[in-house]
Length: 320
Ligand code: SF4
Image (cartoon, rainbow, N blue to C red; front, side, top):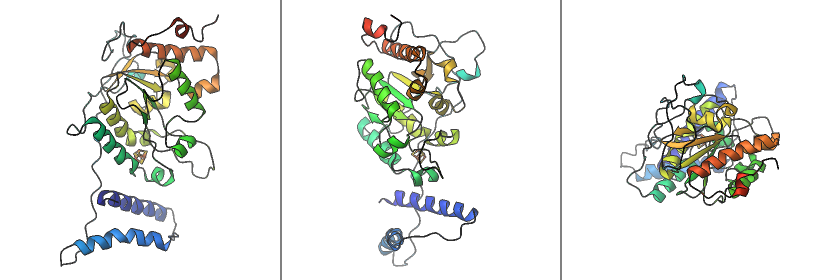
């Protein structure tokens, strides 16, 4: 384990123990092997130190991704008239509704010195050992970083891993994931040719509950958001599709009524963003009108990407 990772783990352990102490807990059970493993890096560092045998300093936490400002508003724009390479936001006369504020900080590559694949691998490695949210780091099975082509033109953004994703380490693998996969195939694409990621990379914990999922908090999503922003900045997709109100909330930092903004192009970090319903909502609702609305949003994304659209595709979920 690197010094940085060890330092982060140590800091998180101390933070967690202090939390337990504040709650009144006085004793915790620790296996002797665990104590030995914790002590090993310190002993090694002491051996490697100067003859003065000063204890090795605890390394500072690894540098964190810089979170771009989240203030610049962008108005919801009409659908793009023709496929173009970049943003589609145009001002409208009416005062912008509060729901229309979307992040638009220009894309900035955080690791310009590295080739894309290496930068992405480094970002992934950083996320996989992340413990910024000690309560999630201690309850997760694994970090669910994202899946797909890092050169994808289309990127889907969900909210957070659920129980299935936590087990498999891949976003959108449960029932909602199966539906998303069908939707992607319906577009003439595959999961391997798009990129799928979540705002939150760790499953929201459910203390005291043996099963079930919970909605991530705004604070949790804002803590994790820089990872997604770096993914977006590196991938540079031509279209983003946000799945559901919570994903949108994670992106903009405040609650969003997805039913009001779905189907309306937004802009996120300079990239056209199409908000639509979460596949889980479609599964719960099952109304043909909802399915058609989601499909229309995906058709808009396809048009923007200049993907071929057959008559059959155009007519999905329309009444005969
Ligand atoms: S949710 Fe994100 S920020 Fe929090 S511990 Fe997991 S990877 Fe780190």
